[in-house]
Image (cartoon, rainbow, N blue to C red; front, top):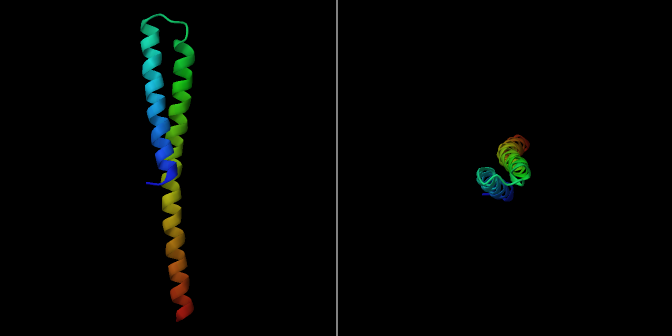
Length: 77
């Protein structure tokens, strides 16, 4: 698990918790529920995008390693 995946999972979890708190505050009719929901959605979005970025990075790294392995075998021949 790389650092981007860890950060993405943490941010996603924080976003879900903030959204749950926002919904709880809405039931209590607090004025802070709107702000909490907005922050929760933004944090969740950042976490989700970070998870996607970590997956793209992993795929790119694998393809770069494969290209280097092919180049090294071609140079040896």
